[in-house]
Amino acid sequence: DGGITQSPKYLFRKEGQNVTLSCEQNLNHDAMYWYRQDPGQGLRLIYYSQIVNDFQKGDIAEGYSVSREKKESFPLTVTSAQKNPTAFYLCASSIAGATNEKLFFGSGTQLSVL
Amino acid sequence: QQQVKQSPQSLIVQKGGIPIINCAYENTAFDYFPWYQQFPGKGPALLIAIRPDVSEKKEGRFTISFNKSAKQFSLHIMDSQPGDSATYFCADTNAGKSTFGDGTTLTVKP
Image 1 (cartoon, rainbow over the protein chains, first blue to last red):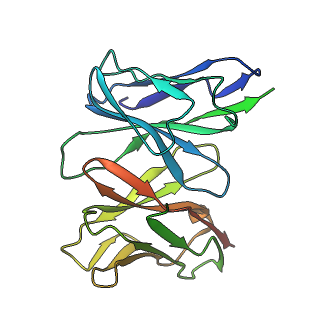
Image 2: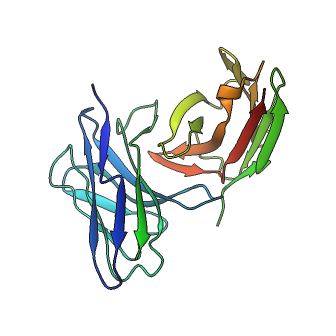
């Protein structure tokens, strides 16, 4: 089955620690995205990538980093500089440049601070 | 700054009712207006979408009404069912970037 796989489902971070969230897709999509979701709020864009080895900051990139070494993978690192990391993190992909800009989402990773 | 304003924040209807969720946008460069449905603990999934060259689109029990001059669009759910209980997000998309509303939590009572 084609889709987006996020892991782990739940993640706990200790103060001062960096943690990495995994996102893999087998949809052959060029574009991938990371969103943060807080209770009662919409999805806010952290980083996005339209092509391998290239990515751009979204609206709330501070305290986060990404890489795009392979088309199918777009891991997100939550660094110790992110002082309020507790949130639900969603990875998505789409066909870059298509007129139909539908986003396909993974099932999310809930990150909590110990 | 919020570019998409969604209302109401929550909505409760009886089974068979017609909930209506509204969104207003600011940036006229947006060219794709989707609605996503999200169940607890899951990622959102596309429900229905519209482009600004049409005023209405229907897919099953779901209808989008689009008012370009007012920069507003709304989602109507006909004959709502308890299984429709979820959080609904509108979004505006341009050049591959989507901006989301804050979401509407819909509860359909049996």
